[in-house]
Length: 213
Image 1 (spheres, helix red, strand yellow):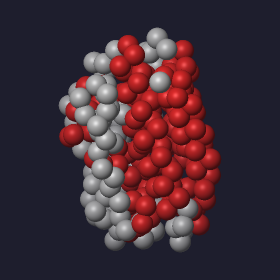
Image 2 (image 1 turned 90 degrees about the vertical axis):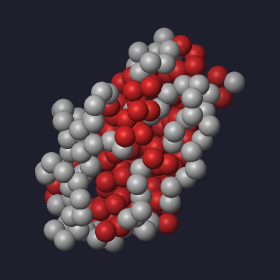
Image 3 (image 1 turned 120 degrees about the vertical axis):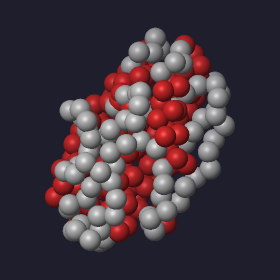
């Protein structure tokens, strides 16, 4: 099946950060999609990002143009929303990958879940402070990808998951570097604090991927 890149699925039209442009989808070896909470940690039906203990659902229950009440500008709002979906995706994908029989993949997935839950909670608090309404549902194509990922097994799953992690973290680093140029100090500080974490994930995923060849 096609390997769907997270940033090829997200709607980034409102984002004017230079690094937020949507990349092309990659063709992957028959595996699954990135997920982070069961739907980024989950699956089945429209997946509410605002439900569950690891949720980033913000203080209101729906998305929309909230820049009129936000304490940050449109670019920074777009960054926080994209980071929220991406972070939830990393948790959900990690939870699915923790079922792998590959010790390296399983350990990496466990680290992803722990690190991204922590970052997600920080992002949620920041978004609430800045009065940003975070997305409450996955795009339908992304949800379908996560559902497909749950049905994958063995070496094909492991290869697909790690390939997804390499590609998505590469794009996530670019996204957060854009966020590090935000005018709002707290948004900028959050991005700068998170960049070393996601860079470490990127390097670890590349190392695991190299061992699979």
